[in-house]
Image (cartoon, rainbow, N blue to C red):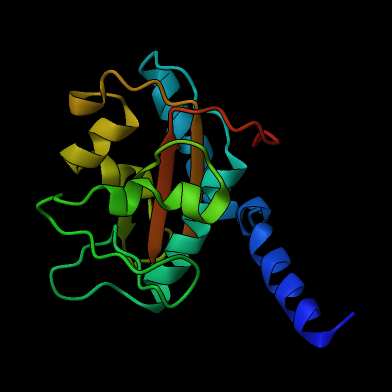
Length: 181
């Protein structure tokens, strides 16, 4: 096979598998947050949200991106640096371009629907991420399907925690994966 053809074939094959890669194994703190969110929802008589390998992959990538390249200026924690996996995206507080965030699960993991993210930063040891989000009305509403999220029926959830950043992605499309304990 000619070297040029082999190089082109290698290039296309490497990109065809990007969306199919499995997430890293959930770390203990990620698994705990996943379980805590579902326990909290059960206490409110809300259904548990199933584990999503694809949304977990996006959450883990984004938490690492935030940790390594924190957003600056008008860009908030829903922004992406473009220096790791995925394209650069500056998500601003006016929410003028929500597709910047919503489309990341499709771009990075092949999730066939929009994704919705909550994120937080905290460098304290043993952070209680769920309680931090309970204290933020906008984030809390996503977790418990209130406000503008009332009509959403979450069918998938993924969690990523890296270097003082926690990210949880929610989706309305099922993404069967191995359940978390």
